Image (tube, rainbow, N blue to C red; front, side, top):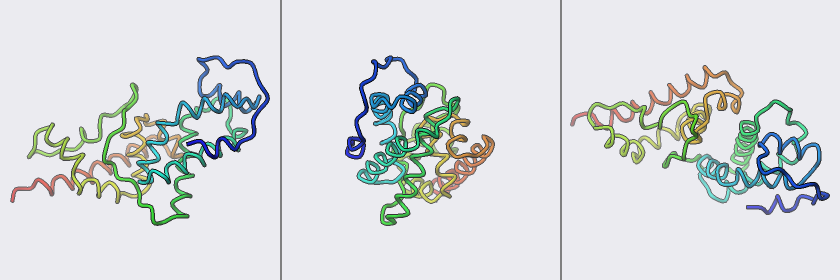
Length: 215
């Protein structure tokens, strides 16, 4: 997953980077000093997380890899636009989503990803698992959780959500972003993120209710 990245020109050697540098210090260091190692460290930190997100988002391994490459190429090209005081992760996801949308517009045959598996969540997540918010009186919690993640009807319903709502679900429930981080990525107020998630949960509950109505 490094074809495009390896094509970037090498930089002059710089002093060793501190191992505990934050993402923001790395991108600002790359911006000011052009040290390729700062860029490579950012790629390393986000390689698995971002690729898995993109694979889920676009629904195709090869397309996800292409989008990943284009995302970090844009990080390289636009690093001067990163301003001190910003957080790198939401900025990176904004770039990645824009690249994914552009890729899908250029190649309509690739379907949008379905939410088949849940990725790990961060320690500071403000919400529980998506399935924990789905209500259904006809099944126990463990049975409902299993059915909610495996149900073809539910997966199809999530895939058919409006793109803006679907993005919110992906970022919060599957990437573990806090509401404010997702709001920053999507350039919308926190309240709008919450309302979109509420709409998504309502839609999924409708699907589950239909599936578990008595015969």
